[in-house]
Amino acid sequence: MKVARMQLINKWTFIGIPLIVLAGSFLFTLAVWYLVRRGGGEGTLYGGGAQAPMWYFLALGIQALTLTFPFAMAMSVSRRSFYLGTLALFGGCAMVLAVFYYLMGLLEEATGGWGVDGRFFALQWIAENNWLTQILFYFMLTVLLFMVGFYAATLYMRWRTTGVLVFTIGLGLALLGTVALITLTETWPEVGRWLAGWTAAGVTALGAGLAVLLAGSSYLTLRKATI
Image (cartoon, rainbow, N blue to C red; front, side, top):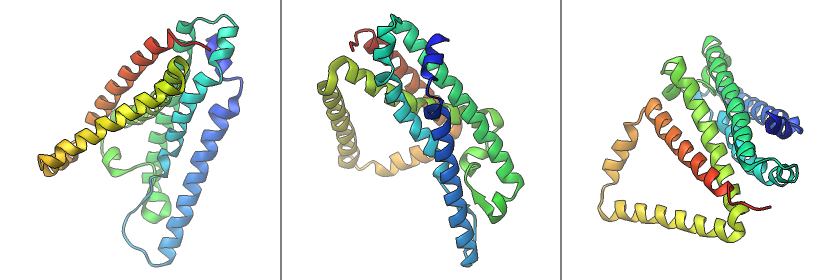
């Protein structure tokens, strides 16, 4: 709890900026939708701006370690306490955001897509699932992006720029090798059908597994990190 309070010293970073990002993205999208309708546009309108605050969590994952870890160490906070307190805080923030997205999706459907048949929160692929799957999907995605940023920061704290470069290059080579393998074996149609068959629940389970893997790797790396 003390670590969580320490992270929340600058509430603007955790509350103010995400709200501004979300509100700005929504208002800009809504303005574009109304212009489209005024211009005679038909059909359901979709916008992906709702994910903007989630990507901000990736940056928060980096800041949560690089900006506060040295201070925590100077205050004799153990690495274990810092790790658990930070993850608990962001887990709570992610759950609040997930519930908010679900409720806004309900409001969006009740208002006929804000009067213009728009889909900003209630994207069909997600909204067609039950309430629990929707909330867990948003929660998983937010936590996963946070853990990506947090893990990248632990790599830097442990091995500095060299470690980040080696990991990034290795990841790039692995992705390139996968693309090359699929291309040479001419299996892109099978891959496309496999991807199209994923459900929101399946993606949630896969993302949760990746988040747990990153969380464990982050802790093992953080134990050896220095300031």
